[in-house]
Length: 369
Image (cartoon, rainbow, N blue to C red; front, side, top):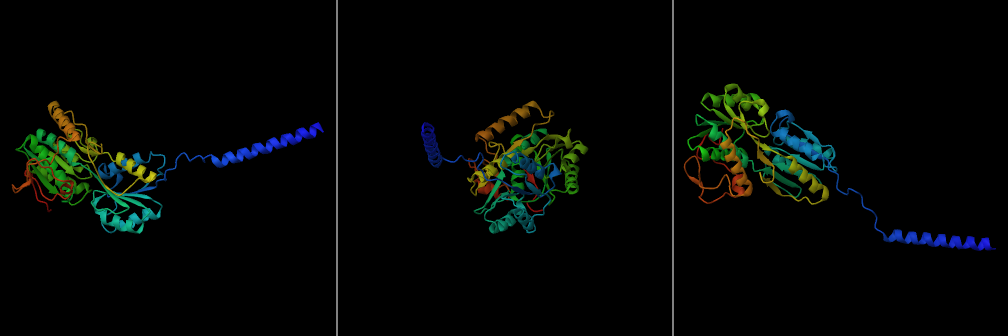
């Protein structure tokens, strides 16, 4: 009888314990997943080959940096995609393969990006260097005119003939703005120097770029600058004993003797930020325009041939730009015709900079080819 009573008591205690455990399970919160972020599958559209050592190469380095995030799956890129309506087909293909974040990395993809975005509202699109947006389309670029201005100071100090050549792709505001900032930097230290511009009508064509560079060297340029994706301008300067300012990435290996410095891109910081925002749901359509302060653009280390006093001056001006006490386009500024386009004491609004369609005094060339 005693054993039976003990058995009944034990069963009652066990039942009470199970009931209490069940009650506790109902009141305790369920543990959240360690990573509740949306998985990112990104797609990139490139205007040139990733091996161009320039524009596309710099973007691809940013893509690789973004992939270090734990919630970013291996991304997809398609290189050498023609600009214009044809690019819409390629962008659509990326979305159909599962991309939920698409970066289109050249100005000529702008309208195609908007067209595809209208059909895929649940995908986030980011267009580089354009000015149009939509609910699921943002745009982004960098204030490359800041290091362009600094590189102009270097060129203005290093030229002996006061003739500086500039190999430029297309006469669009992005390129015009860079030429003007470079020229203003040149003339801030050397008012006698002029910048001669030759248009190539291509972002990436080493043969055409080399011919343009040689044509500038033929008319007396002893320093070259460029808004191109291939290192052909660098190689022309190296072969002819001139100096050269690079672009996009540190291309000194292509012209170790000629290379002075280069305005360069650091896309990784921006791509990482956008991916994080899309993953955590905080992304909103906006226009991103970062500069040296945010680390998106900078000036590459200078060649040892650049005098110490020039390096010191550039470092001072760079610090002033980051601090906000120096703006490369602060007035007074005159155009080629001698008309004041930026009044003394004024700074152009971002919209005016983004739509720039004139050359400043000191540039030899026209806005059309």
